[in-house]
Image (cartoon, rainbow, N blue to C red; front, side, top):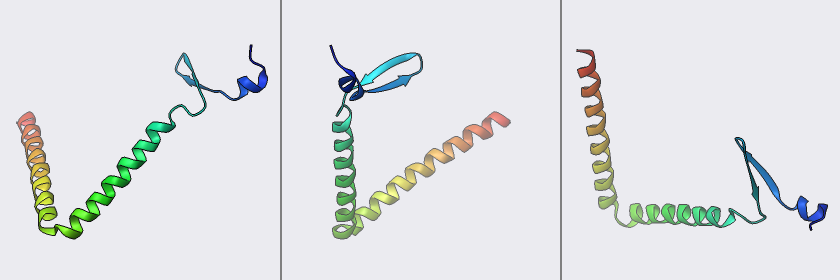
Length: 83
Protein backbone atom coordinates (compact mmCIF):
# COMPACT_ATOMS: atom_id res chain seq x y z
CA UNK A 1 0.00 0.00 0.00
CA UNK A 2 1.40 3.35 -0.99
CA UNK A 3 1.21 6.44 1.12
CA UNK A 4 0.57 9.94 -0.13
CA UNK A 5 4.26 10.48 -0.85
CA UNK A 6 4.30 7.50 -3.20
CA UNK A 7 1.09 8.55 -4.90
CA UNK A 8 2.35 12.10 -5.34
CA UNK A 9 5.32 10.88 -7.37
CA UNK A 10 3.03 9.73 -10.19
CA UNK A 11 1.57 12.15 -12.72
CA UNK A 12 -2.00 11.41 -13.72
CA UNK A 13 -2.73 12.34 -17.31
CA UNK A 14 -6.33 12.59 -18.49
CA UNK A 15 -6.94 11.59 -22.11
CA UNK A 16 -10.61 11.98 -22.95
CA UNK A 17 -12.53 9.66 -20.63
CA UNK A 18 -9.56 7.32 -20.14
CA UNK A 19 -7.14 7.84 -17.28
CA UNK A 20 -3.47 7.04 -17.77
CA UNK A 21 -0.97 7.07 -14.93
CA UNK A 22 2.43 8.17 -16.15
CA UNK A 23 5.30 6.79 -14.10
CA UNK A 24 8.33 8.98 -13.35
CA UNK A 25 10.81 8.78 -16.21
CA UNK A 26 8.26 7.31 -18.62
CA UNK A 27 8.55 8.94 -22.01
CA UNK A 28 11.98 10.43 -21.37
CA UNK A 29 13.83 7.92 -23.55
CA UNK A 30 11.89 8.72 -26.76
CA UNK A 31 12.48 12.45 -26.18
CA UNK A 32 16.19 11.76 -25.78
CA UNK A 33 16.35 9.80 -29.04
CA UNK A 34 14.28 12.44 -30.81
CA UNK A 35 16.87 15.04 -29.83
CA UNK A 36 19.75 12.76 -30.86
CA UNK A 37 18.26 12.18 -34.31
CA UNK A 38 17.37 15.85 -34.73
CA UNK A 39 20.88 17.08 -33.92
CA UNK A 40 22.40 14.25 -35.96
CA UNK A 41 20.30 15.33 -38.93
CA UNK A 42 21.32 18.96 -38.51
CA UNK A 43 24.99 17.97 -38.29
CA UNK A 44 24.67 15.80 -41.41
CA UNK A 45 22.94 18.63 -43.29
CA UNK A 46 25.70 21.08 -42.39
CA UNK A 47 28.37 18.54 -43.37
CA UNK A 48 26.60 17.74 -46.65
CA UNK A 49 26.25 21.41 -47.63
CA UNK A 50 29.80 22.29 -46.55
CA UNK A 51 31.66 19.40 -48.16
CA UNK A 52 29.35 18.44 -51.06
CA UNK A 53 27.69 21.68 -52.21
CA UNK A 54 27.04 20.36 -55.73
CA UNK A 55 25.33 17.26 -54.38
CA UNK A 56 23.31 19.34 -51.91
CA UNK A 57 22.21 21.67 -54.71
CA UNK A 58 21.15 18.69 -56.83
CA UNK A 59 19.11 17.27 -53.93
CA UNK A 60 17.39 20.65 -53.46
CA UNK A 61 16.63 20.85 -57.19
CA UNK A 62 15.19 17.33 -57.15
CA UNK A 63 13.04 17.98 -54.08
CA UNK A 64 11.88 21.32 -55.52
CA UNK A 65 11.02 19.66 -58.83
CA UNK A 66 9.02 16.99 -57.02
CA UNK A 67 7.12 19.58 -55.01
CA UNK A 68 6.39 21.57 -58.17
CA UNK A 69 5.10 18.44 -59.90
CA UNK A 70 2.79 17.72 -56.95
CA UNK A 71 1.53 21.31 -56.95
CA UNK A 72 0.94 21.15 -60.70
CA UNK A 73 -0.99 17.90 -60.29
CA UNK A 74 -3.10 19.41 -57.52
CA UNK A 75 -3.78 22.46 -59.69
CA UNK A 76 -4.80 20.24 -62.61
CA UNK A 77 -7.11 18.30 -60.31
CA UNK A 78 -8.79 21.45 -58.99
CA UNK A 79 -9.11 22.83 -62.52
CA UNK A 80 -10.74 19.57 -63.57
CA UNK A 81 -13.27 19.89 -60.74
CA UNK A 82 -14.38 23.36 -61.82
CA UNK A 83 -14.78 22.64 -65.54
